[in-house]
Amino acid sequence: MESYRSEVFVEGRLEKAHSSASVTLTSPVTEEVIGSISDCDDVDIDRAVAAATNALPAWRETSLKERGQILGRIADLYEKRKDEIAELVSWQNGAVIKRSKLSNGVMPVNAYRSNSQLADTLELERFVAAVDGGSLVRREPIGVVGAIVPWNAPQVLLAGKLAPALIAGCTVVAKPSPETTLDTLLLAELFEEAGLPAGVVNFVTGGRETGMALVAHPGTDKISFTGSTLAGRMVASTCGEQLKPVTAELGGKSAAVVLDDADLDQFAASLISTCLPNTGQVCYSCTRVLAPSSRFKEVLDAVVTTLQAAPFGDPLDPNSEFGPLVTARQRERVESYIQSGLEEGALLALGGGRPKAFPVGYYVEPTVFIDVQNSMRIFREEIFGPVLVVVPYDDDAEAVRIANDSTYGLGGSIFSRDIARATAVARQIETGKIAVNASPGAPGVTTDGYKDSGFGGDDSVVAYLQTKAIALPR
Ligand code: NAD
Image (cartoon, rainbow, N blue to C red; front, side, top):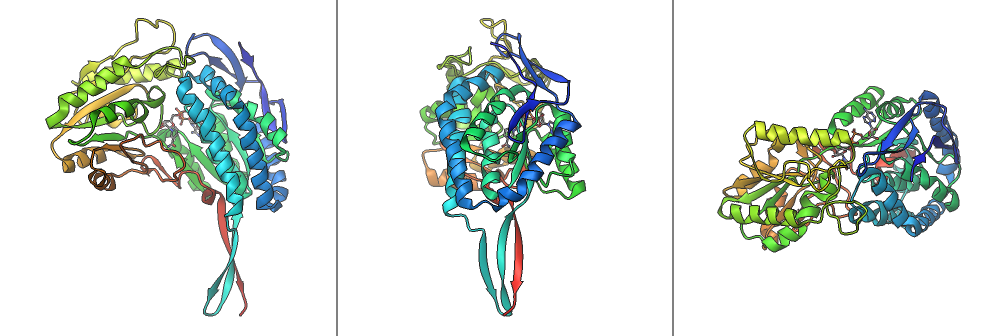
């Protein structure tokens, strides 16, 4: 199967892009060309932003009930096609299908559905009394939203922006990553069938330059960005110059803290979803495992044994736990981190190379480093691949210090038989999302990234509303 698409989704129609430039798509499994998509130019962005601007007055006047009904229909239609969409994502980005069926199947349905249900509870106008009269306090849609998402879990990340923006009454121009554009274009069919008015959601396609143009466009009233910290700084800087509100969900280097009373079978069972989900290509991956010195060998054995036994290979095989990395560039990046770890003096406890059984495809073995110093790049920087460090600590206070020795603060997990003790440790960790005896990826919770992991709130309807007070005479 190959797919050459040159359309954008504007004013409710899939139309040929103005730009004649394209981005080539390559299979992470076969390394062969599998298609291309348009690399949109300024004319494409102008058209999409104009469509969203024109659609805004009517959309924001629709009732919450009506918007909720449309989102509910989108959830129903998505649910019917969720496996097809998850497979299309995995075909493009190499995400193991088991994982993709969650993040590109079940979770987007939940996001559309839960936001549709806000129609019953969301209060957009209320009277606030004061001694000298009072005000009608209204929450109004912020306007035209520019939404930009990465390739690693494209559908849940996109739904996490579209669904709250739509229920709030905003219109949207969204840009997926080039690596996962085909599944986004497929949504155009669902939106039309669900009765979403033309122009309320528009898709432009392309890479970094397209994203930059969307952010800088004077017609976008808010930017919701998910991606790397490096790009997030640029996005936030442009928004800062324009005083444009921005939500930035960025990178991470989270810690899984195994306390000395932890059930290591439970830790091992949750290791992949906590520490290396999606072949380590998830923002909250806990790629720093902190192990008590008294049980260091046991924890390391649990990590190595679990990763060695994990099914590895074709991402579309329902058993696979590890697949290829998304692109040749991503594999180079991961390999350069492995090289830096070796050069800085860390030792390999597992992996470190390309698997002999898979000479074709962007595969890297699950890799574990020990003898790691906090100053090393493999401890400090986000690798975004199947690479873990296991670091010893002496007591809970030291575990907290090591976990917090990071410029990031996105996820985290604590493993312990004593929930109160684990919760006490979790309270001290500077991070937005942390779980006890589980992966931090539990759905449905709205959080902020701490430190360089972003700001502005994880996506929720509040991020798409602005407040107005109409002062009334006594
Ligand atoms: P990336 O920042 O390179 O790209 C993300 C998206 O932004 C893509 O659509 C890209 O085309 C666009 N883009 C890139 N540079 C841009 C710029 N200067 N201006 C506007 N748009 C730009 O990130 P990536 O490599 O595609 O994705 C992986 C990163 O995303 C990791 O750092 C990961 O941690 C992060 N991420 C964060 C979350 C979260 O919720 N915090 C979720 C998923 C991924």
